[in-house]
Image 1 (cartoon, rainbow, N blue to C red):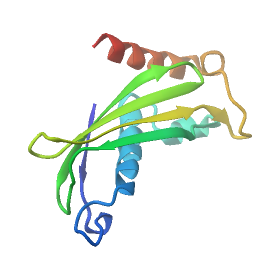
Image 2: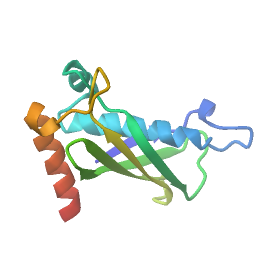
Image 3: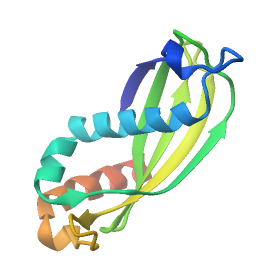
Image 4: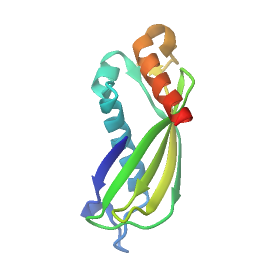
Length: 139
């Protein structure tokens, strides 16, 4: 699935290019949009008492972006182990050039900060995430 982001002026630095930290923000925007599209918006997940903190982020910057650039962010679940979830991101400019590839890993906790068994406690969520991860492995 894809998410579209337009680079804002405030996201650029003194060199007039996008500051590297903003790519991580875009990943979050794209991830939240992805979850909406698969029927699990964050407010719904949080209302169930689930939090999903970031465990790891990895970004590979390929080309710079600048104010007003339109960035297409392709998001996919690449791994789901029930407690741990991994996303991959591919960001492209309007010319179709890859500007950044990235991954983020997350876990599922209850509001007390304890790991939860998604498969046992939330089988519908587990089924959807597992299906998306399996789909991305098989193409």
